[in-house]
Image (cartoon, rainbow, N blue to C red; front, side):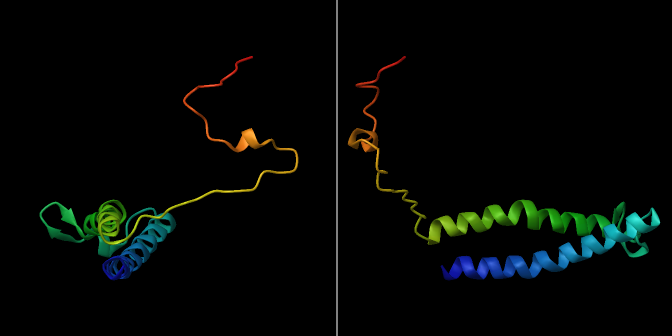
Length: 108
């Protein structure tokens, strides 16, 4: 559980700032019809800051959840869901018995 907790905290600490940055850039684009100047600066040949923001955001939204779910599957017990309810007043006992591979099946 500690590994999952740590992974989730690191994930959220990275996801929140990159998402806020992306939202601010998107608001600017909607209001002005073009990207903010800081997103258009080239940091490598044919690679702008805005592309780096998009790449980081995609990693946080597409790849990190897969990694975190793998860590969680290896470090935590699986969640067991049990659904039970007592039969209601008019229910017959046979309605609560499990099916038996088609035995005793009647078709209309």
